[in-house]
Structure formats: structure tokens, C-alpha cells
Length: 298
Image 1 (spheres, rainbow, N blue to C red):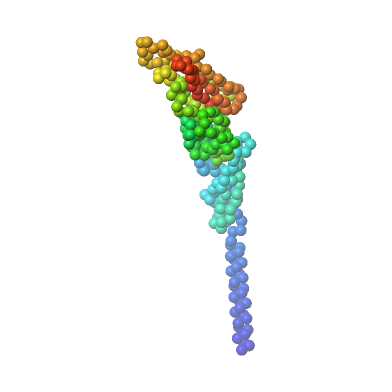
Image 2: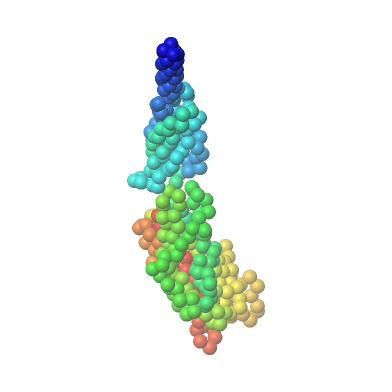
């Protein structure tokens, strides 16, 4: 009996020693260190359409157990713009034991421009309209089409059942946090009176220009319809009726006959409106038609 007890103790001790050696081997063989990330440059300049490969160029990751784990690198996040339109990119590398290491790199775009609005028709709408966005769109070099993200400021209210002019602020932001605002005037008109007024058509209704570059507002007038006659821009800049009748009193419209109120300061960044007005005195009472050109000076 005594020999059996001694044998049992010997077996137990041997088992404990074996288990301890096994656990020690497991612990020693397991990688307890995360990969190390190195990069040739901690700040880079890239194009706005740079893919992940270009953003990660020059970044490597090495693990003490797995060796080169550069292929595990991913971009975890890219921050909004900070000073000088710079973003901070966070990258992560993993090893086979799921240890992770993070590092950051500054990213600056060499061809970046802020989101731009576009407008193919004036911001004039008939009474009781349900849409005061019209043909306003927005495009961005980073995110593409931002039209669906255009918002109207809640600070302004357009009374759609009452003809008049109303201030409005449209705005859109891209994924880099660049918010662009467009303060404009929205006009609500009475459709019953619209057909009597001269209709002024422009080649564009929203333009961008650099500070110091002056535009000629008359260059954007393409056509005026008045008294049922369309006066179309000719090569010399005069609007003419292409097929005038023999007894027709008016056959053309010159820049002197159109009242242009140009409030744009082309030396100062901002959003401005140029108003065009044309008055028809041929009827029992004079009627005036107008349209606006939105000018964004950068």
C-alpha cells in the first residue's frame, strides 16, 4: 500500500513537471510583441484620386515572429482637413496573433479644389412650388457628386405661396469636412404675370472666377424674348431677331438697353449676384423681366 502511494506521488509530480514544461514552451513560443511600422516619409503629397496603394507608398511593417507583414497594412481612417488643407491618415498593421500597431501620416493634395456648385436655370420658381432647389448641383474632386447632400439653411424661409424675393443659403460638405456655402436670392413669381414680362436667358447662371479676374456681365446674355419675339445673340454681341418682319419696329437689343446691376467685387473672395433687367414699354403698361447671375470669387 505504501509503495502504491509513493508511485502515485511520483506519477503526479512527473505529470505536473511535464505540464509546466509544456505551458512554459507555449508561453515562450507565443509572440507577445506587435508589428513595427516604418515609413520613408511621414508626410506626402498626392493627387485627389490617389488609391490606397499610393497612400501607403513607402510604409512597411515587420513583426518579430512573422517577419514582413506589410501586406496586412490597412488605412483605418483619414481625418478632416486641419491647417493648410492637411489630413491625418491612420494606418494599422497586424500579425498572425492579431496584435495591431497604428501609425499616422500627413496627407496633402496637390490638386485639391473645394466643392463647386452648378446651376443651369435661374433660381426663379412659380408660386406654390414644392422645389426651391431647382437645377442646383454640386461636385467634388474627392467624393464626386454631392448634389444629394446639398442642404438649405433653416435660418431662412421662402413663402412659396407669395410672389417675392427671398434670401436663402445652400451648403454642401465633402468627406474631408470642407463646407461650402452659397448665399443667394430665390425669386417666387406669379405665373399669370410671367408671360407678359421679357424673358432673359443667360449662358450660365452660376460662375466661379479667381480674385483679380473681372468678367463682363453682358457676355453671358444669350437671348431675350420680348413681345413674342426671340432676340438671339449675334457674333458682335448684339441680340437680333433672326427673321424680322418688314414692318417690325424693333429688330435688335443692345447692351445699353439692358439694365445690369453688378455688385461683384472681383478683388475680394465672396459670393455676389449680378441682376439683369429688361423693360418692355410697348404695351399699355411697362413690364420688367429680370434674372440673376451668381458669381463666386475665390
